[in-house]
Length: 193
Image 1 (cartoon, rainbow, N blue to C red):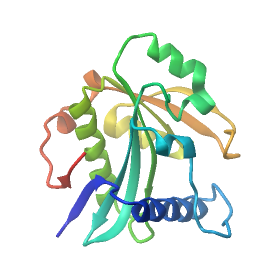
Image 2: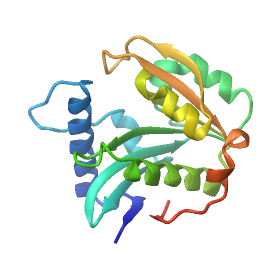
Image 3: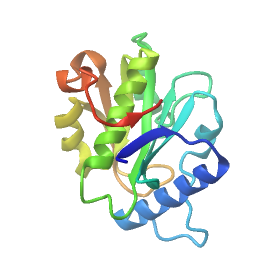
Image 4: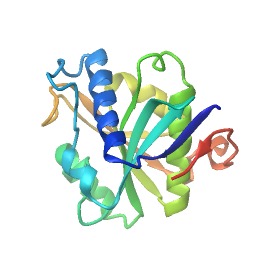
C-alpha cells in the first residue's frame, strides 16, 4: 500500500496527531510525559483556516504528521518565538507559509521514508499555493539535515521557547533555492494537500 499523506479529516485524527506528537517529543527529551499523553503544540494555530494538518499513513496506520500554515490574519507559529524575524520576511512581500510540528511515530523514526513523504507533501503544498518562502523551526541537531535536503538557511536561534525549555532554530526555505530533485515533482507517494 505504501505511504499516503493527506489532510486530517476528523477530530479523532487530530487527537491521534496530538498523541503522536506527545510521544515523539517525550522520546526526544523535549517534554516529560503528560497524564493525558497528548501535546497540542501551538493550539490556536490548529483552529485557523490557513492551517492544514497532514497525516502520513503507512499500511493504514498513522506514521507521521506535519502542519502547514499560510500566512494570514492568524499569523504563523513562528510569531510566538521569532516575531521580529518573521516580520522582516513579511516585509519582503513574498507569499509566506510555515511548516511545523513534523513528527513520526515510534517504529518510523529510524528510517527516512515517512519524513521524505512529509517533505514531498510540503513541496506539493508550496507548489499548490504558490508559496515562495516557508519558515520552519527545528531542534539544532536537525539543522544540517534541512540545510542539506532543502537548502534551508538558519536565520535565528533561541535558547528556549515560550512553550519548551529547549533551543530552537528558525530556518527559511526559499522556492528559488529548492533543489531540482524536489522541484521535479517526481515521487512515488500518494499525496493530497
